[in-house]
Image 1 (cartoon, rainbow, N blue to C red):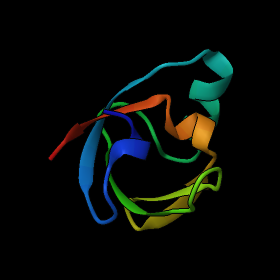
Image 2 (tube, rainbow, N blue to C red; image 1 turned 90 degrees about the vertical axis):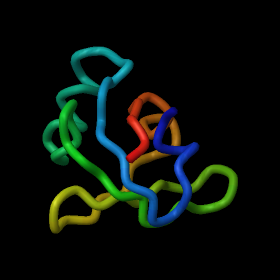
Image 3 (cartoon, helix red, strand yellow; image 1 turned 120 degrees about the vertical axis):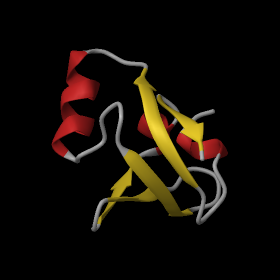
Amino acid sequence: MDITQMKEGEKGKVIEIQGGRGLVSKLDSLGIRPGVEITKISNQLLYGPVVVQVGNTQVAIGLGMARRVIVEHK
């Protein structure tokens, strides 16, 4: 499942990022990389950003990016 399919408060482990080098690099700079556990904090209806917690940091990523981050449900 991708991040957009997670419910608020749900945790998951990133297992894959489906994208090119640019997307992988951008997400890596935000701390989102395979093997990292994330918690979905919130998302805006329809087209808004998705807020996730990585460690002690909360980051907002666009819906398109969030759809490319595949997580394993915990």
